Image (cartoon, rainbow, N blue to C red; front, side):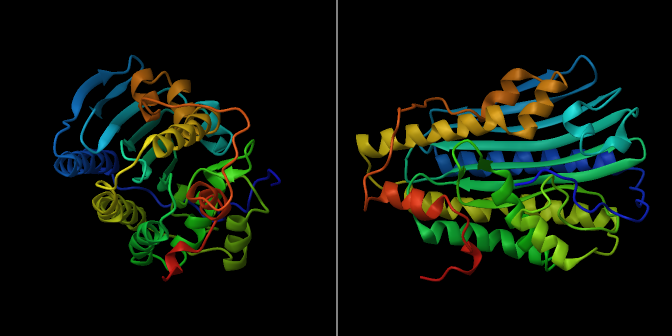
Length: 343
C-alpha cells in the first residue's frame, strides 16, 4: 500500500453540543457496565475486578479484568477519560490542525481471550476526542477466530452491518474494508482475523468516509468512488457510535453459546496459543490505541491488558494441508464478504 493522505473534508466543521464531553463520558461508562454484567452472566463463574486510576497530567479511568473464568481465560473492559496540554505525535500526524491545543479524550476498550479454542477472541474500542476547534469519533470491533466457522463470522458481520445500515448505507462497506486494512500484520502478510468494522476521524465535515493513510487501499478506492458525503451532525455520529457499542453483545454472545461446550485437546490448545502470538505482535507493533496510551503516559497495566495470559511462538510453523488450521489460513485470514455469506 502507498502511504498518502486521502482526500480531506472540504467544509467547516460543525460544533459539538456544549455538553458533548459529559454525554460521551456517561455513555462510555454505561456501555462498560452493560458489557461487564452480560459477560459475567455468560461466564457463570468469573467476576470483573475493578481498578480505578488517576493520570498525573489529568484524568483517569477504571480498568476491569476477569481472570480464570469458566469461559474467559482473561478479559478486560476499560474506561478512560484523559486530558492534557497537547496531543501526542501519533495523533498529530493525522490531525495537524489540533496542534497547540489542549485535548480531551475518552473511550471504552475491550479484549476478551476465551479459554476454549473454538471461541474467537474479540476486540472493541470506541473513542471521542476534542482538541481546540476540532473533534472526532473513532473506533471499531473485530473478531479473531482460531478455528474456522463461517456461520460465526457471518453472524458477527451481519449484526454489525445492521447497526451501520441503520445510520448510513455506506458505513459498513467502507468501515468493513477499513477494518481489513487496519488489522493487518504487514510482516506476516495476513489479517489478524475475520475483521469487523473500523473508522476514525469521523467529525461531521463534508468529505469522504475513509480518512486513513492509504490512497490505494480497497477502503480508499471504494470511498473515492462514493465521492464526498454531505455534512453530518455531531448527534448523528454519536448515535451511530452508540448503536455500534450496543451491537457487541448480540454479535458475540451467540457465538460463545455455540462453541463453549465443544471438547478440545492439546492440538487445539497449542494452536490457539500459537495464534495468540499474532495478537501480541499486532498490539505491540501497530495498534494505535496502545501507542496513544503509552505516548500520553497512560496506565501501563490498563494499556497492556489486551495481551493474552498465555501465548507461544513456534519457528517456521505451517499448518498441515486439508486441516481446519489450514482452512483458517487459506480462507479466514483473507478478506471475505462475510455479511453476504449463506450456507
